[in-house]
Image 1 (spheres, rainbow, N blue to C red):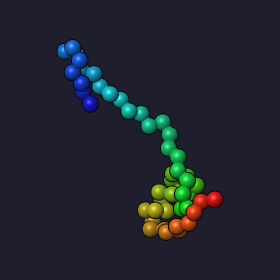
Image 2 (cartoon, helix red, strand yellow):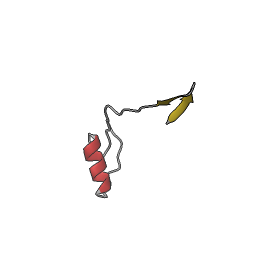
Image 3 (cartoon, helix red, strand yellow):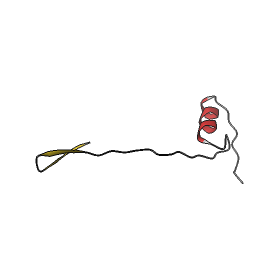
Length: 47
């Protein structure tokens, strides 16, 4: 997002350095999202 600052343009940068997720569908981001996309439903509380 460019910002005007004294006649100079600056850019804000966002970097994602990691992801984590634990769900009833899987113990990681990849497995949880893949199971969800495949339509797998396993709703339960996590212990």
